Length: 522
Image (cartoon, rainbow, N blue to C red):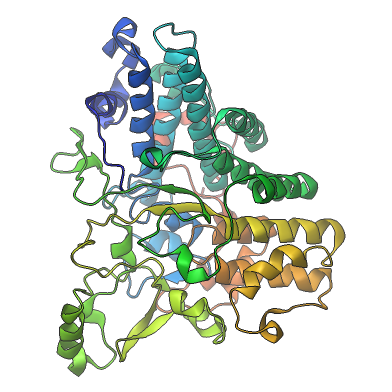
């Protein structure tokens, strides 16, 4: 059953910690400490409110972080020119464009919402620590979860911007708005401390009515990813093996089972955010007529096809529409997240993962574009347009096995690494002759990992992060052919980071003190 509880306290938290008007106030003057966090329930609901920010379109809702981790790489393209994905996908972004928001999705929206999570987390920790109105075990649990959410946000911030404002206390907004940029390495050191604390407290798994909360294993996989980016291969391998050997999560027998919408909490998924249909969200006074954060997902509509784009033979459009209606389905999405031209052309034809990542024929109709069925949901009854209940998968075990394989290869070569790669490939091919890569040397295995992560984790918001940490983003993008744009021509070395949005620089000139170039965009 989907978790759909939204408490009055959460509404209050959003009213003060979510809206733009709040940015002009000091929350400690708005909320009296003696009446805030007066019980265990208050503290827990404050955490719920902070999780809800993660569901905003700018982070894990709609496309959100997909803009930065998938668009502009070699997996995802839109099926037509589209303004709101063009700056990232075509590498035409600048400081001013970073402020332009469409459906609360922009570089600026992502920056603000990640810092909202941080601000809330610091505030909650401050109000819960030594609060005798809250039982000790709940205090510890809430602090651990807050520190995880803070670490997650700072991890994304360093991935996207590198050096950035960093603080871990309940500062006033006047104090926050003059902070300069802290070196990325210093922030990551703090992130690791938060993740390690979270792992020492958070449970290994949650009961059914609390699914959607991050367990210790969500913190562990981020820690492993950080070690791998630092090329601390042994620490990365140790953390991956801890997840493989001690967590309740396992690889499922088939790839298709991982994405079964009827089994969204399957054993392979380490963490996913819980969404529910018909939960419209909370009114945000800064954006009249629009809700600040909802509990229904828009993301599948970005992957669902549009009927007016399909099929390839437009004379058959009516017949396709009839065939869909007979199944209770519709091509009523946007088609703005489809498989990239190069990705579709190179995906191995004998790979059993292909039908979930490349759909170019549906119900016998040839399609114009290759769609990614593992994220679409065409069922009108359970998943109407822009009102889906599909969860947002964040981390899963397939990723961990490939991470372990990469770490082992970098440490000792491929001989010991096949034990982690083979389970992934065995479920992806029908015969051993197809999946067995025995005989690769270290560089050959490294290149196999480049491809295997592409096929296995397509559009799961890992690709640009991987290409950047491998140091090959420019080479990959410059050697591809794209449908509409010219990212292969436009990309520059500084595009491994985003610019801090112009309005942030105007409000806080201190952000330019340590780097007057704003990550190379000036």
